[in-house]
Image (tube, rainbow, N blue to C red; front, side):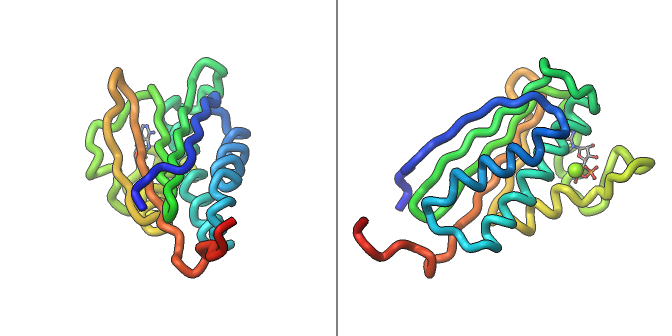
Length: 153
Ligand SMILES: Nc1ncnc2c1ncn2[C@@H]1O[C@H](COP(=O)(O)OP(=O)(O)O)[C@@H](O)[C@H]1O
Ligand SMILES: [Mg+2]
């Protein structure tokens, strides 16, 4: 059950138009496991929040081709693990940043609920400092048993 059955890794510039691209790619990567519509929608929402944070916070909306986001996926028989990393400004106090409604951009449209949304839509989330500066967000989504393919194909 703990065997990795597929992997994927991509790098994209931290631009807002890449948010929808990234979430579609990660969703497509999981399709072989027969996820439910709800599970796919949860994953898309979490990816959007994480990528948006890279664009808005890590690279402070520079929208430059030089500011990269790395997305790495590992697919297991029953779950997805996805790691979203940037080399941006980093988060000085991670537990505080993860609190509901905490935001360093209160003047704008940010609600401070991004990490809370990721936490509630995914099964696990951990946030760490990136080696060399920046942030790594690692999340897992477990797929429900009912959807497993029963045939041997
Ligand atoms: N990748 C990141 N790089 C730097 N800071 C981040 C990153 N992701 C989140 N943060 C910090 O954590 C705070 C909380 O993030 P979040 O819960 O998504 O709320 P919001 O994006 O609405 O501010 C942000 O305001 C920001 O200060
Ligand atoms: Mg956010």
